[in-house]
Image (tube, rainbow, N blue to C red; front, side, top):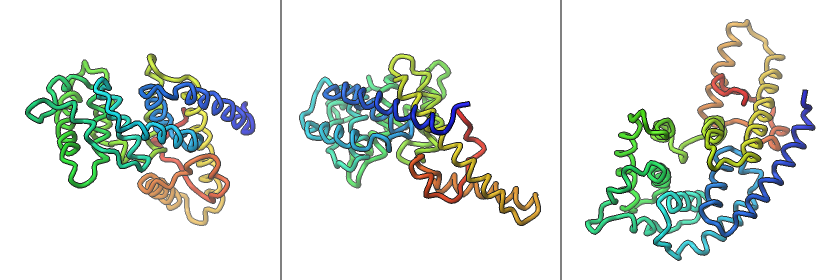
Length: 265
């Protein structure tokens, strides 16, 4: 059985491998953006706060230099990640995806790999951004059609995004879902990052279980009442997002729990 200390050692080793990947991707916008996005969606961004901050700062400095050859996926992902970081980048970057009549090009409709990132990016609009409002309406309409297509390999992700956009999601709840998606991506997944995401998630899960065990020690009511308490407690944590956010925070927490729907990976 792997000890807690050994797990922490593995996390440190994997962190160094991912840091090297971040450095190697510097200056390669598409690869770097995708790596940062995966780190965040896997719930381990807290381990690379400085590296991500510096990388996005560098990307922001050249953001105004519009590249007409940049594809929809890269443009949308860069827009979302920068806005999430607090950079109020202009939405003009999406004008190149419109036709002469001011509508989004029909050629984008079948581009599920680009439509999904544009949809997620559109949730970071500010008041008065007409082009982003149009992007949200455009992508929502066509993604709804894609979600019913059994032959679309991204149908599952589309359905999930329409129900729960990244902007409105709880990182720790979504991490469990994204692990299952990321490990299926044979073409671009980073093995070290995937392993780190799983290990980190399982470590935090063990902390939550330990907290629930501690609560159980102080049960002063009958079993049925306590079971109702646990159920309501889990529901409260799920809805409010009061999970332990990372294993470094765990030592400051007294109690917590894990939704039954969240299982070990």
